[in-house]
Image (cartoon, rainbow, N blue to C red; front, side, top):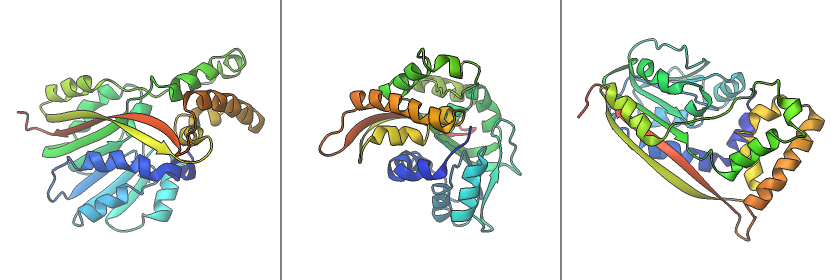
Length: 261
C-alpha cells in the first residue's frame, strides 16, 4: 500500500490532537530512549524531542514515502532519527523507556498477539502507549466497504489483497496488558470534528482508509470509484453552513510496564 504524506497531513490538526491527548497521560520524567512505531511523516514525533530534550528519539514506519518526508522535514539530527521498519519484526537497539504508536496498529493484522513482544522491549517502569481509531462501523467505512463489494467493483478487486483496518474493543486491550503485568489505563473519546471545504469527509478518507483501493486502481478507475464513494459520503455526512461534521471515535491505551497494581 502506497501512502501520500501530503494527503495525510491535510488534516494535521485533527489527526494530531489524539496524539497529544495520548502523550499527556504518559508520566515519563526523563527517558533516554523513545521509539515511535508508525511515525508517519514525523511531525508528531518531532514534538517528543521538544518534550524530552535529553532523549534519543527514533521514528519508524513501514512506508518509505512517509520516512522520506520525515527525514526531509524534521529529521537529520543526532537525537531525532527516522528509519523504515516493519513493527512486526522490529527489535530495539536497547531497552526502550517510552514506546508509542499513534493510529498504526489498526493496519497490523494480529496486532493483539504482538503486545507481549512489544511490551518486552520496554524496561521495567517504562511506558507503552498507543491509540487506534474505533470508528470502523461508521458510514465513512461501511460505505467504502459497500462500494468495494458492489457488482461493479467486486470483480475488479476480487483478486487483490487489500489492507483492511481492524481494532479490538477497549476492554480487550486492558485485559491483555494486565495479564502481561502492566498497570493499564484505557479510555475512549469521540471527537466531534468539523471539517471545512467541499467533500471534506472524502478528503479525510483519501489520507487513510482509501489508500489500499487507490493503490491498486488505474487513474480512470480511481476517478470512477471515488465519485461513487463520494456520493454515498455526501448523503451520510451532509455539508452544513459551518462545515461537515465527522464524529470520530478513538481508543487510547497507556501502560506502565512491570508495575501492575
